[in-house]
Length: 304
Image (cartoon, rainbow, N blue to C red; front, side, top):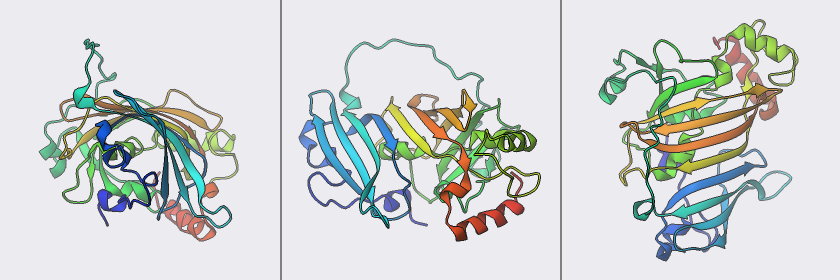
């Protein structure tokens, strides 16, 4: 498997059609950090080449705002826009202004971590290497190792994890934070099977209908409608090996849910905050005919 950096490599097409805009076209702005991001997901994307088109909306001394559009060729809509958004660029290292302590803490408190070495060896008394559910369907999650609390998650609709890249030597950098805030165990699947089955049968968890395997929840698809990200801290240029992620839903209702994603470093410093608007749909909405068969076979042999 290619590393994350290799899989997301960018080729410049022209001065406004690529992703490294503030490292090239606007390098003189000295604003290398994306401090805020708003994305709307219009169409499904797929593995393969994509084109990023950038429009300068406002170039300023402290912050600049650009519009970005990601498009892919498809059978009917050639180079159709799949994702559109706004990025706010700045330089975290040169920011100045008022700073006050907020005394913010995670509640409930996450399980203590003895050391990242213990995580790597899977010997930490409170954390254990977890399996990535439905890896054939959600392949992007295979790029990280997920470590979950040994005694289970601390509350319903809440999931804690420590993550590292599965590719040897890969580290999380500023440019991979957008990926990090979209990699977590799905909180819906943390509920007991019978509760999920009842919700699905009633039309509240994917459109109703029968489950794929008797007595087991139907495999869901969780498309993101809107994603917002605010970066609080710049990671070291060389990156970090480990990050802590907490994801929490405040309401799951009528096939739609909110998600708050918090990212912290090994020191417990807040790195990023992300908020999502997601739908909860049957996986059949996002599968080809052949893929449906493979996922059904996987569900028959899995313990959700």
